Every structure is written in structure tokens, then in C-alpha cells.
Image 1: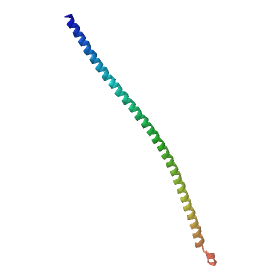
Image 2 (image 1 turned 90 degrees about the horizontal axis):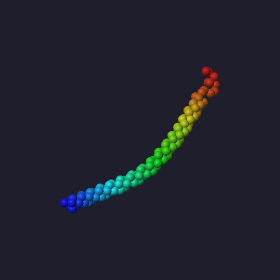
Image 3 (image 1 turned 60 degrees about the vertical axis):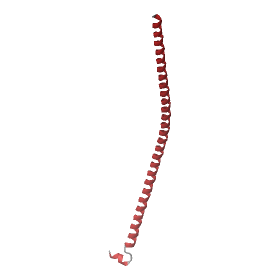
Image 4 (image 1 turned 180 degrees about the vertical axis):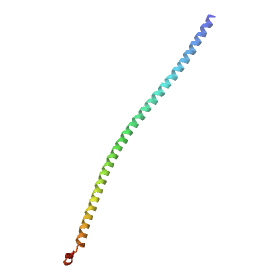
Length: 109
């Protein structure tokens, strides 16, 4: 009887040991899976940060180019307006010069 009880206890302990070992292996596998996922995520985050830095630099460059083009456009428009004003003044002076009467008939008025 005692022998049988002892065998039962030993088999129960052996089964428990096997179960605990299997659970340990499952936990170990889960840990390594999580660790590899974590490392993969770190690599992804580093790549995303590098890409974000590149995009920020490109954005800065584009904004500076936009400002420069706007400045050049404003200068160009200003010069065109000034030229138009000078041409209008020149046309006015020429018309005034040619349309004003000269000679003896100009004294009639």
C-alpha cells in the first residue's frame, strides 16, 4: 500500500515536472519571440526616424526655395511695372511733344 502510494506520488511529481518544463519552454519561446519583435520594432523606429529627418530637411529646402522664388517673382513684377510706368511716361511726353502746335498757329490760343 505504501509502495503504491509512493509510486503514485512519484508519477504525479514526474508528470508535474514534465508539465512545468513544457510551460517553461513555452514561456521561453514567448520571451524570444517578444524579444525578436522588440528588436524588429527598434530597427523600424530607427528607419522611420531617419526617413523623417530626411523629409524634414527636404521640407526645409523646399520652403527656402519657395521663399526665394517668391522674392524673385516679386522683383521681376516690380521691374515690369516700373518699365510700364517709364514707357507710359515716355509715350505721354512724346504725344505731348508731337501734338502741341508749333509755329505761328500756336499763338492763336
